[in-house]
Image (tube, rainbow, N blue to C red; front, top):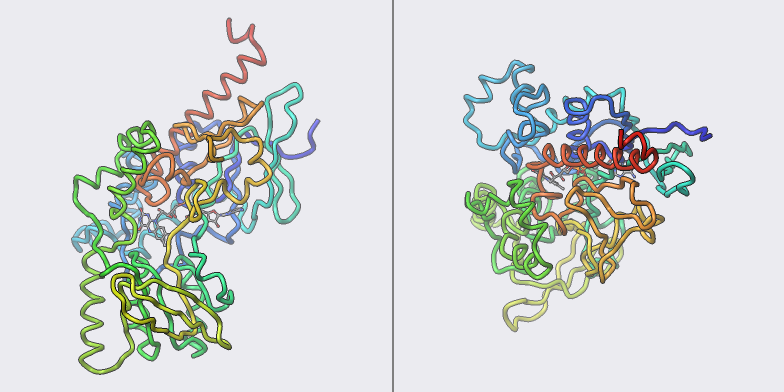
Length: 441
Ligand SMILES: Cc1cc2nc3c(=O)[nH]c(=O)nc-3n(C[C@H](O)[C@H](O)[C@H](O)COP(=O)(O)OP(=O)(O)OC[C@H]3O[C@@H](n4cnc5c(N)ncnc54)[C@H](O)[C@@H]3O)c2cc1C
């Protein structure tokens, strides 16, 4: 008999996706024995980019619970009510709340589940145990050497940051991903970093430039983008339906070619584009900078980075024009912020075939032609020879389930319910195979 603690479900990561899962378990399947393992010391939501006064990018009622259960205790509305701020919040007339307030909401929801979460615990390995007589089980090892087993594993570790290969030669201390921007602020405050290049045209890129130029006027900021100009998000209510559950069905059931067409068509709803308010603000900041001759905020649009090399402690970026025969120019900075998005699953250069944590399991996962993992509509990965092993990807399935998956909170509550239902069905199927007579009776 196993000496390890055994759970029906282990969740890896306790960000919004698995917090929504914990809420859904409590409300829909309270007898399910779950444990969540989170490497951070407490529940956090994108603290790497919590810049003052920035707002969230989803309708606040598409929160951790409301779309699945509008009567939930864990809704954003109830959070405001319990904090005594409901009337004041509604009176502000903000369509998108402040990011720090939504972070506090997510933390408030997470704190209800302290008994089911082990914080400061990183999962370092996941393997499949031989099936033996019973259903297959996963063995989960943590950074403290603790070993646990479970029937179902729900991976909600967030996506891997993407850095373009041209930035590979930059020393790690001179390069940071946009999602971890906050980690270098102390070095700006201390005066160690006095010049920054922000690569990319995402909402994060624009927010970082605005934050730097308004908070640290002594820092020179260079915006670097291959587009002619920073672009506006597609905020049409018609394309906004990409965050509907029905879109997930449409996308999931599309052929690979049609998926790609949908991705191209809908890219600007969430990627390489920003809301109008921050673009207007940045344009005015550049205008003021030119007017006063400060030369602290320079935009290099229509450029490709030809090379990025270290010269002493500085990074030298060589920029070539993307849209004309203009000569190369170079920019020297103390730090490069790569606001260049995340890796989805797939065989291409900017993708990855599996979450890094599943490297030991990857050979056992059912795959498509180019090594892409086969993910079910219920977010379950097929495991060869273990039909009742429940391995789920929660919040990582943009390639297979479309734009509302990894890049938005909008569907976390619905997805959690679908995963719980799948776990229940799988358990019933496994039990029916193990005890056929009971199932027939
Ligand atoms: C900067 C940024 C801003 C965003 N803003 C919005 C927004 O305004 N609105 C919106 O709808 N969407 C937004 N998104 C998209 C999406 O909603 C968020 O990425 C959301 O945080 C996804 O939740 P998650 O739980 O899947 O992943 P994460 O929030 O990334 O959580 C993953 C968790 O897993 C933990 N973890 C990772 N590896 C391990 C391990 N090996 N062991 C244990 N724990 C581990 C991490 O510490 C983390 O807590 C934003 C994304 C980013 C990057």
